[in-house]
Length: 478
Ligand SMILES: [Zn+2]
Image (cartoon, rainbow, N blue to C red; front, side, top):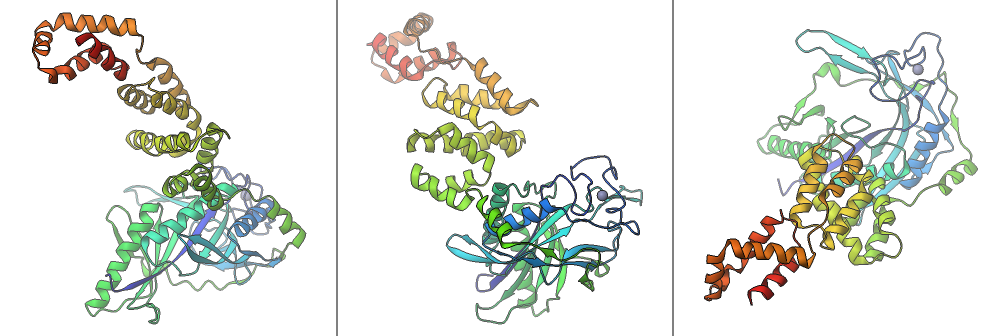
């Protein structure tokens, strides 16, 4: 595989965070009873007319501005015709050759990865298939949800680069508040075009489109699998077909889609029920003024001002809630050392507890302020390692909101026992209970010092201040 060059482009669909759908007033909220968020427009009833949601336009323009695209002052909606049961009109309203944003780029690890276009479109409904019943149901709550499709140029050359590009794109959309970025719920979806060629200047190989990718891991695994598959086909004398393949995460393979489901002739034509979308440059400039600090510059600032390692800064900036809470907790006066300690604590201890418990990052991000308190008490020695481990396990294991669970666990954990009188009393108890070992120690077996420390800590249920216990024991045994 190593001598082959992969050529990869991503098409990313992002659901816009508007309250209502793109062409009607129905709610976009997730998880409602099937078909309860529908009306004649999104059901595609004859005679119903679409009205464009202005907020969807603003969000699409923000996405374009943040990715260095040109926001076009005139763009056109078009009908993309195809038949599928989740598409009541028999066509999707999208944008064809006149999209709302064109020609941007992202910079990923020093490489400029181009974005060809961003266009607005409506989402389709959902089919629910009854297991073993042979029946399917149609839920049109999602039909008409506003989407942007961000079409990347085929500038990516490895699965890891594709993941890095998608991570940065997601972080930007999250910082803008344009999309919630939830890949499991499908509000951020990704298709990948993959081909291989023997060298960088050889003609492009046969392109395969991969669909059904719904996680970062899926992006990496699906592209990696597909590159290997294509190389194997070519090297064993076979011929690749230009086709659409579905990624199956469980089997770790791509499989061709049934031919009935692909090779559409979409017969694009301008949507007669909507006028062209016309913006003014004043409007676009006023939106540009509202752009927040984006993840790239924010990451650079954290690296510069707090001397955070790049990987840690990038990880913090992946989620605006996380980095905002991190910065709020630190405040303007904190040192680079404090920043690094808290960052590492979040990326290692909180991450580990999260993985074990199956909780989600947004919950953890909301709990960063109390996590910072936990971190500080642990760093200052008020919580022992054992106490920290127990506290984190307890707080993450329940069903209660994490912030509250952490506060309770922190209160219940109490503090390490550092009071010299209490420690001295415990040391006396231990020496009295283990007079034989004490005699051995006095006889020169200094290596059993650790045994006494262990016994004292045990009697204190792991809550002793280990450093002070050691000091007091040394004095007592001397
Ligand atoms: Zn509707």
